[in-house]
Amino acid sequence: MTDIESRIDTSRPHTARIWNYWTGGKDNYLVDREASDRIRELHPGIGEYAKADRMFLGRAVRYLAEQEGIRQFLDIGTGLPSADNTHEVAQRVAPDARVVYVDNDPLVLAHAQALLVGTPEGRTDYLDADLRDVDTILAAAAKTLDFSQPVALTLLGVVIFVENDEESYAIVRRLMDALAPGSHLVLSHTVTHPDMPDVDAAVAFWNEHGTPKLTQRTPAAVARYFDGLELLEPGVVSCSAWRPETPTPDVAMYAGVGRK
Image (tube, rainbow, N blue to C red; front, top):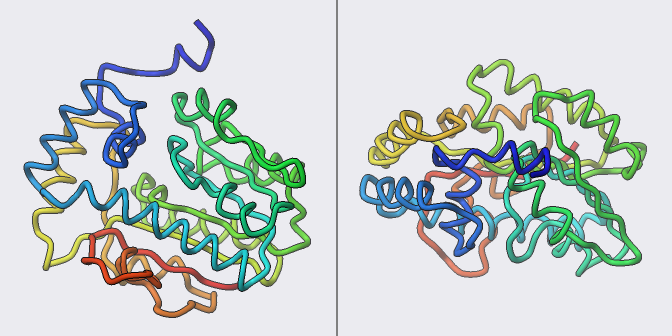
């Protein structure tokens, strides 16, 4: 058994594997599927969040590559590989795009080397690190990315795992401070909203039974991550409402894109 395999815990449901299950993947276990089905009972629409968040990622990355000329992406909290990963979307527009993925989930890392293969013209790299390890991430990513040029920092559904508000804001600020002008922040976050009370019940169930535990924040609190940046239209909204190709129902996963 490899070191990575020894770190995979199949005794408790894990968020990356549940996300994978909701998006139609097969990299999950019975414990994940059972927890997922229970969460669906509490909040029947929650399975759509993963799909909506993934589609938001594709639209945001494609926009940044096509319209903003971004050629470098730092994707922290990658999750399990699926269709249209960040490098696939970016390199479809610009084959020379460079992408660094960061995750500390052993199952993600086990699959990353096999599945996240970029174009010959571009570069794709993978880091085993926690979001809180900002210095480690920046030092390692600098081997692939040129921080004197704009970078798109993508943080999809990952700052929810930093419980302390001020710590989570400080992490995002430190990452953005290291990036050149013209860089962008792409961020999504589960929210608590009075119009969606069943979301709170689903999150409470998850925090009791699953790992890692997550923190909900209000839409206004999510918008704070973009303080000091130029927030692109339509602002911080349901990720399904960020420049969709076709109208889709709102989900309790809010997102935005900001320019430094």
